[in-house]
Length: 237
Ligand code: UDP
Picture 1 (cartoon, rainbow, N blue to C red):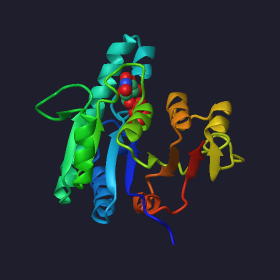
Picture 2: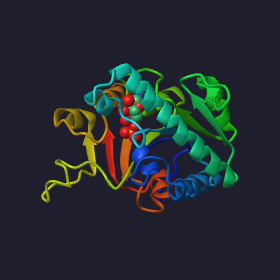
Picture 3: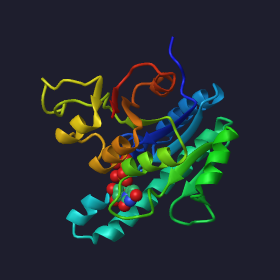
């Protein structure tokens, strides 16, 4: 028997939304929404941080000559489009949702108000956090850690496109790469592993919250990981 989590922070990387290309693939988002609706119906409170890599990544635009901060703001705005798509499909599944944005845009989202976010969660609403931290030079992984801590989630569920956990080397480049079932944040940081960024890993380590890295591309994995099934890699202090 496994125990379901009561409140989770689910991080969805932007890559997933695009199904591997730029923009939003409605079929993929509908699939994600169905899985999330299922766990909400079973009673788990779900807060979500959405990435934006399917639109823009500030560091990549910087390499093409853009000012980093402006490029990062573009990246943050991209995450909001993913939020709206997810909100739409979740509501079609009958799940109440609120989008809270770290950059004020009253027509499409509430501002980020942590205490209100907690009230929404208590009422069974899914809260989707958009626009990252509202600050350049941060990543949505770091925001996932910060929001998880602030809304008192029990765990961060780091959903990745096509990656089923943390490996000791890049499994796409090295056929001998070995997957970890568990590892510590210190080991993760010392090895310079890339599946989450170092800022998010140190924030989680210092505040003692676990992160589970799992593959979103396998149908049913959201329900599995929320139910406490041992999939992916658990990173802990
Ligand atoms: N970003 C930012 N501050 C934040 C969160 C995101 O500047 O607090 C920008 C940054 O340019 C990043 C982009 O938004 O590259 C998209 O976010 P991220 O790369 O974390 O998305 P993911 O890789 O999860 O799809």
